[in-house]
Image (cartoon, rainbow, N blue to C red; front, side, top):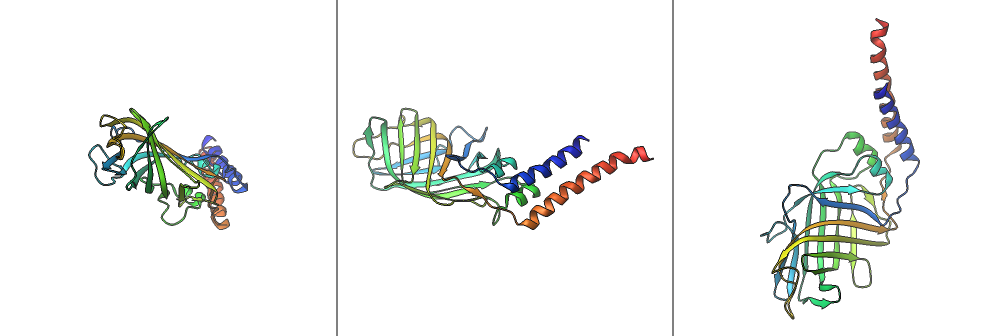
Length: 259
């Protein structure tokens, strides 16, 4: 009875999702560092008045994919399908050219960081998750994008990297699971456990000192993104499959009594 109820409730969930879902929230995705994946996962490398922000360990000189836990927070359709706590690889590559850091009331600031990022799925999804999400292409691009004029801010052993659509900054997103209707988009990486020379700081007229950090982050959009809508035939097959599985379970449970 319990198994059959679960199957039938899954069919009800599918119908509820098909009917529509809310997708208006500032943050639609976040990520955390995968436990056991190392103390730090991003590095800023100073080169006189320039610098580079990349994913990688303490001595990385080129971007290296880092293991993270990726969570869809919106739209509801993807959350209902269990697309959170996903194993993913995170790659970030940004550079600031001839852009000395500055001292501000918030600490040290490094502007002009321009580049790209990507979160790539590193686990198998179930056929139901794939079909119901309506994901496109290879269904591995959880979220990727490009950004211009991002800003690193920090003081001591903590900081952040932020980019938000504005007059001087821009960020754009793409995903196999989401559609972006346009509007204001933003990304924020929280930089913790910073270790540098000796920490986030700079010399006059130079870029930020080299440092490494443990990054987590979130991504926002206003209006919020929407999920892809599966073809009607896909929904029909899914719902028939749910109902068929429920009927099979009921027949198996009834067989001993009939004998």
